[in-house]
Amino acid sequence: MPLTTWDFYGDFLSQLNKIIADQNQLELLATFNDWKTEIDLNKAIDVDTVVVVTCPSLKIVFSTKNMEKMNGYRPEEVLGKTPKMFQGPATCVETSKEIGHAVRNKIPFEKVVTNYCKNGSLYQCHIKGFPIFNTSGELTNFIAFEKAA
Image: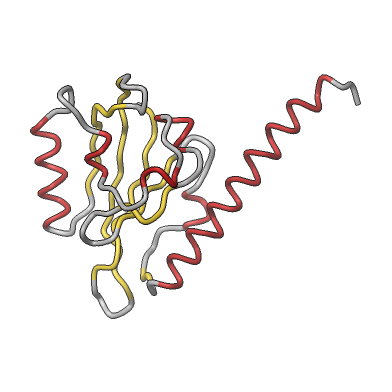
């Protein structure tokens, strides 16, 4: 095998290890909170999708490692904060209100939002958000699947 392919395989294996670690972490969170969901968590995590989980009060409790690639924030930097940390003056107020309405009413939503990277630059973020209930029917978390739009 030529040496030039080692970089390719090294990058691939690094990404694969991050995905597997994120899948394991998300599975533990689902088990701990007794999630009752139709979402296939193993298929939900890929290289292009950032997964963010919040508690009912919208504090971030989990983010996949590929968040850093999307907006410059490492997962440990966003824990305990709300997703509003990614918003700013260019974020559409109406879209934010629509997301807030969906969250308050515990219903799924799908929106494209102008968000801010850690360095202040803008990016369009396609978000699919879902409330997550436990087997007793209580709201335990919200989960969002985000891709650069």
